[in-house]
Amino acid sequence: MSDKNEGKGSCLCGATRIFVKTVSKNIGGCHCQMCRKWGGGPLLVVDCGSEVSFEGQENITTFNSSEWAERAFCKQCGTHLFYRLKQNNQHFIPVGLFEQSPDFVFDHQIFIDEKPTYYCFANETNNLTGAEVFAQFAPPNI
Image (cartoon, rainbow, N blue to C red; front, top):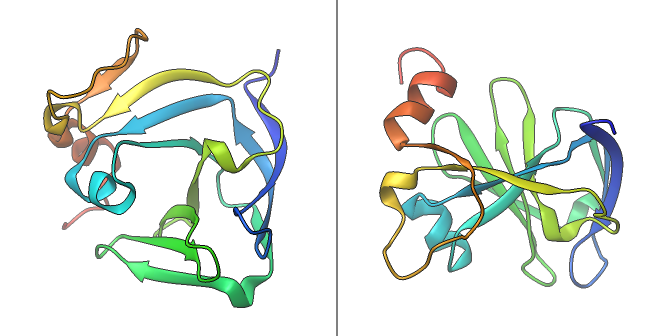
């Protein structure tokens, strides 16, 4: 079984369609305060790299959530479409947007140190604190 596949999906209303060259099968959960505020709970995404295209681009609104990343949503229905690292155009897309998800595996969580105590996932996952995430992925001088 490959750890990456092509993928396609859409927002809730269908005004925005997503096409991805390589979708990781590994789901990551983010517990940072910003992701929880954005979606009302943890953000569950898959890494889709930089080869991502959209139909209905006129329906996409982006928000610069930090110096190094932006978030996007459909301005028609409000569906969260992606979290994108500006430096390398790497897209993390909510797993629920994909039409087919037969072999997704929830295998890692980030900002585990910011996870509230009122929920807990039963899956055994690799866990990183916020400091560990920034040490691995943040561009220099941030």
